[in-house]
Length: 574
Image (cartoon, rainbow, N blue to C red; front, side):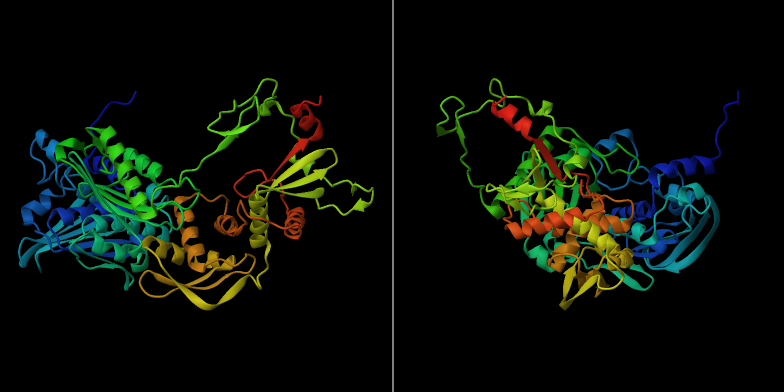
């Protein structure tokens, strides 16, 4: 049995780094938070290779002298906590004293700092070992340069994503910090290109247009809600797809499960429309929240979680009500199962006596339901032309297509059927004619993370017919839309597609399949849309030509076959 031994400091620091430094965005987060804690009013971030090759953060904060600079590279050395009771009243973003030594353990790190203009010091660290400490001339503040992250940990480095993906994570993280610290200037550059340029402003309402675009910011509903010791401020923004949620507690951006659950529940749109985007900052006494829960400080623990959950839900609901007005009251008339006389409020049992349970119903397999139809005849005995799956009868609730075939009734969900048709068209179209140029390009304002995603996926977007080019800053121009799809507003199409991709809700093994699935879902005819018989039969004919006519790209069944014998059994004829 091997003997127990103490690990070298370099190994201990690399193990600790595994908890704190997950990816380049973690490095940027820790360094920027240190800058803000140091009182910085200007934070400059320079990147190389999406942070994989270079992360440089420079600020105009308080800076450090030579002794403090060396102490800052020791584990658990911090100016923010001196006793255990200090953990109960933290007001700074950092406090554990782990970030800088953890980063230095897995990179080439150079620290320049000065407590006043002129005399400063430069410390160089090579994967956990301090190599040089020399004087240098620099303005008041600190600059930390991190190169070759995980270069000596190939197992960690291989799990990093592409440059554009890592860049997107950095920009998304900085968006949250910029929202919660509007009085600081933030600037992010990579390869002489400015990715984020946010001048200092008095409050979050002035910062919002720079984060989401002026047009969307004008549509934002303010949130101001107070309950006891808890104060909430933020904005509810009409959504473009899957909700973008930024949550902060006492200036700290978090991904707390309680807060996320409350926000997602309140953002859920009961009418099936797009959920709103949310920027929300919570303020409460520091002794009512524990931030010492996780090394990354992304999770918190509340003294009164019930109060927080209820207040967040109420605040979002109030903002939505102010914007949309109260929801209309819908009266439902349900027939009484005894006298069948419609009257308001009557309740019908789920299954009256003798009613067979749907769970025991014998449904035909979909593969059989889509077998070749048999000839049908109309009431006069004259042969009628069937649709591909049988004789088309009409629509049920402007949502399902009804067909009579052989000895059964077939219900086809028009949305998922059309979704399958469009999905296969997008994947099977040739190299020519896949894009329909727009007469006038549409200009779309994106947030920094979405702009980075467009740059990353430019080739894949073009492959499905969506041609996009950068304009200025985070603005792009849509030049063409997929020719295989019905016309849609290009800005809405792109924004929702990017939201779905970021949320990883789209099915498919390849990027092109996920793009096709997202576009097909957007463009497919929706429920409650009336179709005439020609439109319905054309859709059924298109479905018949699909490689897989049984399920939509998300896996939902397209049709349901109900045997005639089952219908008669349920209605009491047998």
